[in-house]
Image 1 (cartoon, helix red, strand yellow):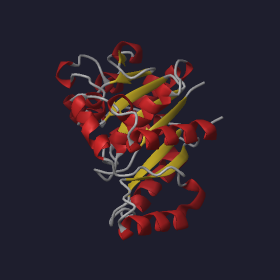
Image 2 (cartoon, helix red, strand yellow):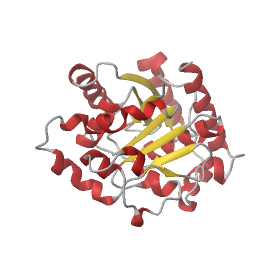
Image 3 (cartoon, one colour):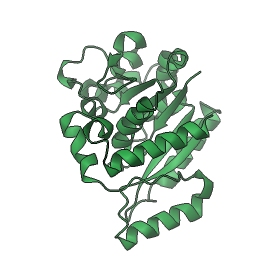
Length: 254
């Protein structure tokens, strides 16, 4: 039985999509069957795996509206063992369209839970907000990874996100766990980066992944080629970091 992991933080630019794409690719290389679900209207996870987002006929939007089955929206990618349900800019409208629906927080859960029989991991790339899209992802997920940027405002908003997770656990999904806090964009030369790492570890201790994602030029180049870091430059530090994270998650879930 597979596991659904949402990657969420309402702050933008913390490495959610980078983590979604490269964690999925790393798990795939380690011979796990992975489905990536793009639940962000910006569709960066889709284009980051080489999907032409202008020509998407079925994706997360249709899944949430229940006008298509999940199996119909799944596309193959060039990353070994990785499939994707892509997003499109249309997804922007879904929060308004679902607002009057019954059980609107459970739309994604109803659409994808059965897929756990076919995949080892289902990764959901969430939008940078705490709206209905993210709520659907957290309600459908077994656990959540929270990327935290090693910069000045890193912990700002984290309390709000943790409160949202608690409220989802209380009302919608009592089985939701925190898979871990992931420190991203770390630069060992900066005192501030080291202070943020120390601060996060001091407050959250065991909840923090041992793997830290370092700043890496190759990581930021890869999406413009529609490739994961594993396909783009397997020898880079970014690839090594994400493989290490994938190994840590596999070990934790044995």
